[in-house]
Image 1 (spheres, rainbow, N blue to C red):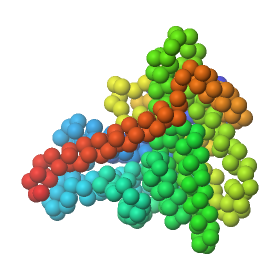
Image 2 (tube, helix red, strand yellow; image 1 turned 45 degrees about the horizontal axis):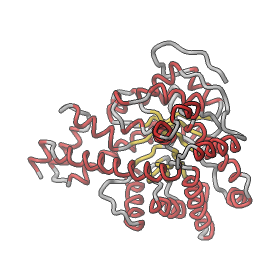
Image 3 (cartoon, rainbow, N blue to C red; image 1 turned 30 degrees about the horizontal axis):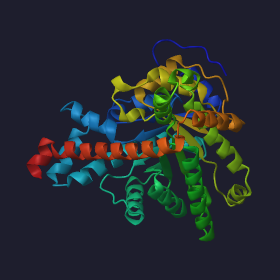
Length: 390
């Protein structure tokens, strides 16, 4: 599927994005904020069919709150402050408001896709306890407050996070298992999700309402592997391996995905009403300022990583560039498991421990998410109205 390049400015309806959709690839906006909701730009992307999902997280909201005094969150913060609402509750209210708004805009997409797309992923509140029972209570609270069928609770795929994925699946809470950095961790998440579905089946629940989307951090892993290759003995000779890890990781994950869907275990769940699940490919774009984005690399990932029932999570600036300039080449993942395993073997020969890197990346990203959450809470506390009424 080679697309002609469109003009230099992005359009709500892009032949590039339409071509991706024809290949079964969705595009989700990573880093949705109230500015994009309020000025109508997100609605324009959705109506044009360019965007079919969204991710709400703390980093872009923090940048917006810090950027200017007249940010679009100010009125809600001031109103809640006058009611002497605690800063933690204000932050939750900001995200709940935006989540409802985004879910409503994507509701027609969700309906047209029969519940297989049109999702809004939202982080759990930063003040959530780290144990599974308190995290589950927070997930239930967020789902209840937002009260939309196309909401997914975003959960980091740590060891504790995979436990939460299983419990959410059992309870019928839609979940986005994020920060997956390896094939092995994807396998762990998939097993946890299925355990939750099997528990739900035993308790008589309708499995068609139980959803999990897994987000694989392909760009994070590629950057880390390329740095490791540069440091390895004979690093110059490793040049052909650089810039190939994202595609190899996607192929390895998709190979597990394909084989899982052919398994008897999934067949039993499918016959009981379980729905197909989607894999998202992420570059952690929303956590970085626009000046730090690797736009060329992310365009390459969109061009290289194409397969049915997947999604690319893209920050607004990268989405615009992809819509205007990307040239995807068609399905690149189906049947490519052996290629992925060969690439992993080559990395081992170069002394690159992918599993160790994956664990370090997950820990780093979890810490960064907490810093962003803490920063947003601090920014809300520093708002004049909160200081005046607190």
